[in-house]
Image 1: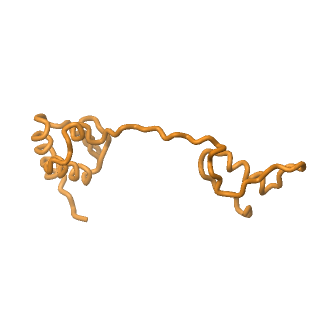
Image 2: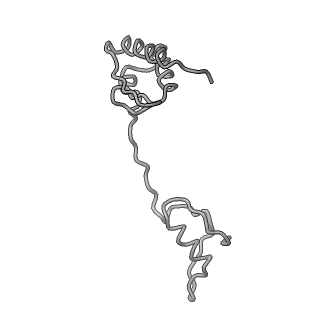
Image 3: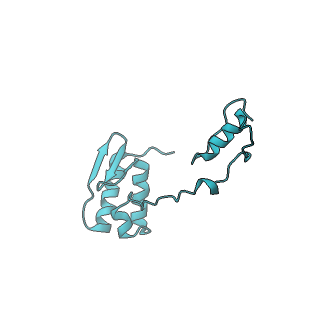
Length: 121
């Protein structure tokens, strides 16, 4: 990994951004992080990569204007019944569940992956 010079990278980015958009970017600096035009904070290496995209012409003007703004998509939450449980499916009997079966059923109902407690196989 090469050592990046902050002033060189930022000046190169400003020149590439100005050539692509016709205006200077607003760069907010925090220790180790850079925010361009109020976008998401990024590291110096990310700014250097964005500079390469701007100079090569691979980034379209709309992408470069908002370099860190990405479309937010919500993941569809699958119903609990459609979720594949990583453990054995247990059916309740007349006496109820054993301790091990109860843990398996409770953790299968949750919407995220869980591990069984120690001692429960």
